[in-house]
Amino acid sequence: MTEPDIKKGLAGVVVDYTAISKVNPETNSLLYRGYPVQELAATQPLEAVAYLLWNGELPDAEQLAELRLTERAHRAIPDDVRTTIDLVPLDAHPMDEVRTAVSLIGARDLAGSGSVLDASGSPEQNLERSIRLFAVLPAIVAYGQRRRRGLEPVAPRDDLDYAANFLWMTFGEEADEVVVDAFNRSMILYAEHSFNASTFTARVITSTLSDLYSAVVGAIGALKGPLHGGANEAVLHIFDEIGSAENVGAWLDQALAEKRKIMGFGHRVYKRGDSRVPTMKAALDTLVEHYDRPEVAALYDALESEFVARKGIYPNLDYPSGPAYNLIGFDTLTFTPLFVAARVTGWTAHIMEQLTSNTLIRPLSEYNGPDERHIDGYVADT
Ligand code: SDX
Image (cartoon, rainbow, N blue to C red):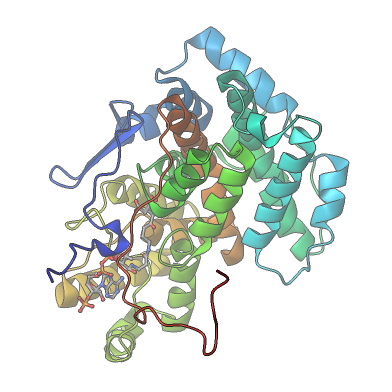
């Protein structure tokens, strides 16, 4: 019997077309609807990139103004959603808190919307749902960090762009422009990355014609894992373990002897470095200078050079993002929820794309369990 050609982890398997982004490991590049992500990160607010991912073109001034008006109108957490967030244990992981909040927002929005046959919604409904999730997630993430610190929530301000308002709601003060810019760049870099595990999860859920909120909740669950979005949090745990640059060699000796995965390094698609890292590293460098924390750069550089030298495995986006978010003042457990707030744009773009030419996603498996066998004494009804 010939062995089946099993592609574990779907590694290298092309399962569909997408017009949303192109990840090219040969040229180490990433295009969002044809634009290099580096150019978008250097010139656009995240709101404009969200529009691009959803609609296929960058917004003109009028379209951006209209999106901003809608986004700002939906930034506040509805009272009953906040009450529900308050029921989540303070020592629960913030990704569980975000997942719970999105699930409730979906239940509220879909209440009374008819049978399951209507679940997938119209393109107009899904675009509106996408904008509303994009708008409210910063407040959910910011509130989560503040309540774990025993602080009162800070209401959104509609005179601040998305990134500045996110920082305002989190820290209760206006961030310096250099911090807002670095944060905005990180969120653009995190927004979209083709058929990564969480996005593909969203597409699988959507392919059954389930609703957008169910797909986003599933994607949040997938992103939480340390092999995926949870890695940016895990990078800081590693930095805390190592302490300072001079400890890197000994730490790596032990970690590799224990066959640990070094979080923030490696990638299923990029094998000679993640196209987004240079842009995020430059943002990290501006933050290191702004906050005068050269020891962070020293540790970052020491671990990168040592691990690359030993294993030839390069950093991914989570490696520079973790220390950047730490410098800005986000709690380590808040890092992956930040990834959710950015990637909800990519997830929802893929959900809407999946619906335009949907086929139920249902792969095959090769059975390797017990041969057919029967219950003792069972006699089939004749
Ligand atoms: C993200 O897909 C996306 O696009 C994801 C993402 C996005 O924007 O959506 O880019 C975001 O998830 C980035 C990845 C974040 N995860 C981490 O940083 C966790 C650490 N990385 C590894 O777990 C790993 O690199 C993966 C999971 C990311 C990718 O692994 P692959 O492609 O499945 O490769 P592999 O695990 O089979 O590794 C090949 C070899 C193995 O050695 P052997 O068992 O063959 O001897 O390389 C080793 C691995 O052990 N290896 C690592 C390693 N990464 C690979 N060894 C130690 N540390 C690592 N980080």
